[in-house]
Image (cartoon, rainbow, N blue to C red; front, side, top):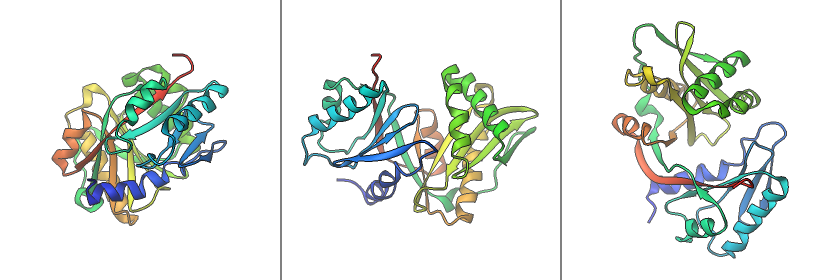
Length: 256
């Protein structure tokens, strides 16, 4: 049985997954789901329960729609989704699970402390295109060069809806994170957070959380949520975030 916090997450976050669309991207409904079309990879926005339709046919339609376009597609599952055998149905249709993450939720006011940074590091807000390219380059050092082909362009195209913070040591970008202000203010997502390995464990990730939480409180935001990796989850739990559900993206690619 979903908790009240998880029910609120479903109501506020999942309903807005297909609303933050950059130029040239559009959403189109197909029964209970909404397809996002025109991004580097397709995305299927799905309510918690799709068990009242022919699920296998619904999955196949999404796969086949993007197959015609020669594009991959993500179907993002949560552990409490229905039908309970949805993951096995996605596998049977050729989707492959990506890394499991944990949805962490907390009240913005609980984390809006003065950020504490190591000597020589500063955090600043930016909307400069050049900084978006620097952030993408930093992420590429951690996650590989493929991210360069889309992250900077995505940040630039959506920056009217994003508040981006960069952490720097001298002229080097060491971490970055952003808030999506277009989402429902009851639940606002925190994204990014990647930190260069040599700068981890020094409070920079925590400071980026505090910086964004302070802005959130000033903007009337109630809750913050994060899709947390196994590395980020313990930090967020120590800060006081609550794990509400696990989430696993299932990816179909025409090249697999």
